[in-house]
Amino acid sequence: MTFTKKRGMNRNILAWSITAALAGFLFGFDTVVISGAEKKLQELWGSSDAFHGLVVIGMALWGTVIGAFTGGIPTNKLGRKRTLIYIGLLYTVSAIGSAFSNDPITFAAFRFIGGLGVGASTIAAPTYISEIAPAKDRGKLVGLYQFNIVFGILIAFLSNYLLNNIGENAWRWMVGIEALPALMYTLLALLIPKSPRWLLTQQKEDAAKQVFSKISPNQDAHQIMEQIKSDFLEKNNKDTIFLKKLRTPLILAFLIAFFNQLSGINALLYYAPRILEEAGLGNSAALLSSIGIGITNLIFTLLGIFLIDRLGRKQLMYFGSVGYIVSLVLIAVAFYLNWGGVSVPIFMFIFIAAHAIGQGTVIWVFISEIFPNHLRGAGQSFGSSVHWVLAAIIPSLVPISFSVIGPSNVFFFFAIMMVLQLLFVIFMMPETKGVSLEALSKRLMK
Image (cartoon, rainbow, N blue to C red; front, side, top):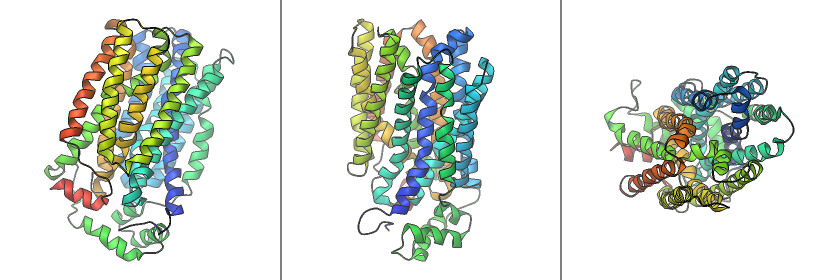
């Protein structure tokens, strides 16, 4: 079954996928924009390392955890489209509220609201795109979400650099400017149709048929729907992702999310300027190097999206795992031997390149593929929850860990975890390239 025309990709699919993927832009911007303001906020409010890491920075991360835990509920009950709209509103409120905060508790509360949007977006956006995409293009289309994440990261680093010297309230502009793209995204999300696969799970066949007619105008929409509905024959309203027959996709979702964060990627992104200052760079040079990290992330994410439907998910994970191990060991050695100059920034660029072409491109595609239609939202929620629990814990511990055991030992630990990831890829991870969602769910449930 294919949803593409003979020449190129259906324009409707591409436009709707890009719109849904813009939730990733806000995810990336919201996640990293705090890196330019966090040191100023610690000085402004006189916070201890523990309070600063666990509350001022960590509260957004715990909002993300809650959003990931609960995001599957509106994604399944209200639908993918309505959930994406509400996510845009959460980002807007968070940006405006954070910019006008005058104390760390209020600031943390509004950052928590933005975190809810981040967590929910990792469920709703990849799920929506995977359900409208043809099998042969699904990797690159879902990969648009990751592209927008890293594009948002780059724009956040660039925005922080440009706003850094505008005065005492520079941090307010840094966190508040996100409201503009958030409002634009919310308006665009109103224009996309509901997911046809979700409509079928709600027994709304006429509405689903209309969407499939736009997705695949050269095919019989009724025939497409019958093929998909056959996947629901074994559906039980009491099914959960914790059934024995779903053990394999559950383990796969857990492990790819687990290793994603044990690479140290969020710890590095959140504290990139601080890490570079620890390595001997001045404040401005550290912020400028952060832009280099964003550019590297963007370039290698584009390369990953180009390759994911050609080489497959597993091959990209091989590249990423080896790159992780090499770069993390080099960063650890650089801190241990006190190498100065540009060595640490260069090693960090290698690390970001490895992440972007491997885990960064693969994770949201892979998790959105491996669960059956009626449990995809719940499965995506589970994988996202594992990811974000660790994403909340690990960056929150960075200031304390650097003080207690030193940067070198922190990066050595991450390197060891990536050796374990390489073993996971070699011995456990299946290839999902070019297989329909329904065929994949049947294969992994055997």
